[in-house]
Amino acid sequence: MRPTFLGFETQKRTLQVAQKNLDIAGNNISNINTVGYTRQRVDLYAMYVSGNRSLRWCSNTNNLSLTGQGVNSYGVSQTRDQYIDKRYRENTAVEAETEKKVNILSDVEDVLDNIDTDGLQYYTEQYFKALQDYSVERPDAAEVATIAVNSATNLCRILNDYSTKLSEVEDTYVSETKNTVTYVNNLLSEMNQLNKRIAKEKMCYPDEYGPNELYDQLNMYIDELANYGDISITKHSNGTISVDMAGVNVLNAEKFKTNSLVMQDYYANGQVVLNFESGEEVNLHSGVLKAYIDTLNGNGVYATGRQNGSYGIAYYKSAIDIFARTLADTFNAANGADDDPARQMFVGYPSGGKDPTADENKDGVLDGGYSEVLITAGNIHVSTVWRENPTMIGMVKSIDPATGEQRYGYDETVDSNGNVTLQNTNVLFLLSKFEKGVKFGNENDFKGDIYQYISFISDRLAETISYETSRNETAKSTVDTLLDARDEVSGVQMDEEGINMLNYQKWYSASSRMLTTLDDALDKLINGTGRVGL
Image (cartoon, rainbow, N blue to C red; front, side, top):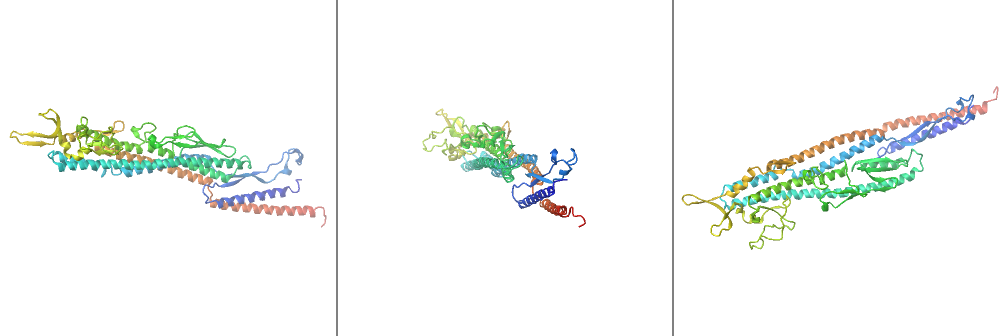
């Protein structure tokens, strides 16, 4: 015969477990709108029959007297799928990276949006048209020559404007990169503090269980960190986690230590240089930080140092610099500037903002103290000598027969009747240099005529944005699918919890009824047994 009160103990435990299931179902419903909350469940197991030989009934192989000891619980666990979590974080890093790249390149597109319509191409066409108009006039036609100077000035200004605005975009995202590095470091610090709390709380839990609410908070931090770089997680028996980013440990749960990111001075290096505090260079494969590095350091075929081959802000700055330099060098050389600096049509203003070919003292001597400045889109200007003497490009070099010295003057032809006609020989020569196939660009990237190069820059930017947009849409679709799958596992479903509550309530009621039944049986045993005839 089993112990008298064994059934009561079994049902008491059943009531406790049923009550706990009702509590957890209610807790799930209460947190249905709590961000980051993971659905919880009570892990149950059937009570086993004791193997104590002295308690067996009837025979050595029969444990009937102790069978039916009911249910008990190991603890309260979370319903999470680690595989889905891992894939979600991998893909959310790609989504965040491509979204940031599209945003940055769209800002570049806003600057260069009209480059092949009413922007650079338009002002280039206007400049060449002005030269062509001047070429069919007399070389001393100052009014027409002035139009050519003004058209060249407008062309320089649009290039200056592109360079300035691209630099503004660059400055914006350099600042964002600094702020992001600070944010990631703060996030790692918060995770480190949470690791300490979890380790302390875990001492009060059995091996496989822990403070679920703190785990939720930690998982939210992990999801957030996954946006900024490719990470991998290592879980420890005390409930804490260690984190690697780009293959380098950034959160050490055993020593409760972080390995912060360090960004060096961008403007001193001319590029993003990002290291871990431990000294390793950051080599990310995805994430927002990679987007910043690729778009700020991406210089295509012009990459040097830590720059990369992506088509980022640096590349498009280099592309318009090459345009400006090729334009200036070709015209300057054709106009004889290689031998005489005063023949320069275009110059690069140094940081002081003065034209190195100017004669401010009006003493016939060019201002000194300036080394030759590499021409870029940001510093290209029409030279002072051309601006002050628009017909300068209509003059040709000749030898003064009286003195034997070189001089510049208009090209004259004399017919048989002694009539003198001025020829615009030099302007025609300047135009012919471009008609003969001056190539813009880089042989390893693209090389073509001036208008082909402008179209190439515009097309490359559009293609790059299209490529990153396509990647983003693919990643976003995958992330949404994984998020739905994760919600199915970890999210609270009102209908499901409602059904569970009804089942637990019925379970509780049935167990209560069982106690009543046992009480009646015990009353009969105590008060009715042995009283024959009553």
